[in-house]
Amino acid sequence: MASIFVTGSSAGIGQETASVLVNGGHRVVVHARSNERAADAQKGVPGAAAVVIGDLSSLDETRALAEAAQALGPFDAVVHNAGIGGRNGRRALTGDGLDPIFQVNVLAPYVLTALMSRPRRLVYLTSGLHYQGVFDPHELERQRRPGDGMKAYRDSKLCDVLLAFAVARLWPSTLSNAVDPGWIRTRMGGRGAPGPVSRGAETPVWLATSDEPSALVSGRLLKDRQQLSANPAAYDQGLQDALLRGCAALSGARLPT
Ligand SMILES: NC(=O)c1ccc[n+]([C@@H]2O[C@H](COP(=O)([O-])OP(=O)(O)OC[C@H]3O[C@@H](n4cnc5c(N)ncnc54)[C@H](OP(=O)(O)O)[C@@H]3O)[C@@H](O)[C@H]2O)c1
Picture 1 (tube, rainbow, N blue to C red):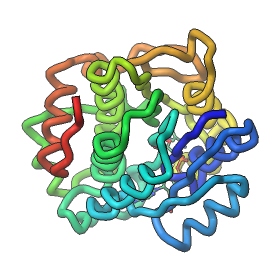
Picture 2: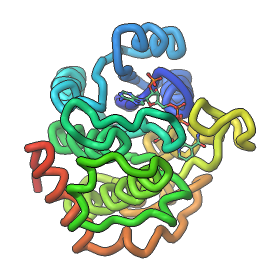
Picture 3: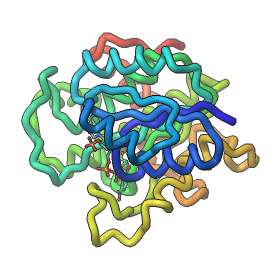
């Protein structure tokens, strides 16, 4: 039995991931943004060991979430699943003065990774749209201005791969990978998406728990349990380090190395 923390487990792929893990006999801590959403997370994952609360669009709440989750650890695996898409209208800056897509999709998983003990395995949810993403370290200040939502989403998903690969390089005893779940029928994916939520959860669950040799990899992008080549920018160590420096500057949390 493994102990696993799944962010964004009040809906969608995160909730399915948590449910499958609970049904597989694992100890699972789920996460929701608010008390109200925590009730939905608990209802959706009845066997969860605990629920922790924190809005990832707030740095203070993300730091408190890291502390609350840490108190329920140590974890064998953490699945950084929570995310927001580029199509919704939430484009006002967060209370920290940042683009919400960048803050929820990139800065929050960075802060949780930096402030929690190193698990044996880390899984970061990215997207096929990361291939069209761009990360320009000189443009990090751009995160203080809301721009085009889909561009922000694509860029954020490239940053998730950069983050997964950076952590894999800097923490050799942790298996850190990025997962493209495919286009999945969730609130974010929409009703017309071809993939059922079970497909979206399958590879995160497998990477979090399986001892098959093909699951014990690190610094890879996977989809449907298969390795894929990521956007070439994701392998650029200079860009990886620049992202870590930028996130440290924006959050005050330094990734221990
Ligand atoms: N669905 C797809 O086709 C697809 C494709 C590629 C990649 N992905 C990735 O897969 C992951 C999960 O997506 P999904 O389709 O399952 O989306 P979803 O159904 O919209 O669920 C997103 C989850 O993240 C949580 N979340 C969002 N903002 C949050 C915040 N500020 N604080 C705390 N929690 C927050 C949501 O909580 P609430 O319920 O309270 O909003 C929910 O639990 C994302 O990282 C996404 O980028 C999805």
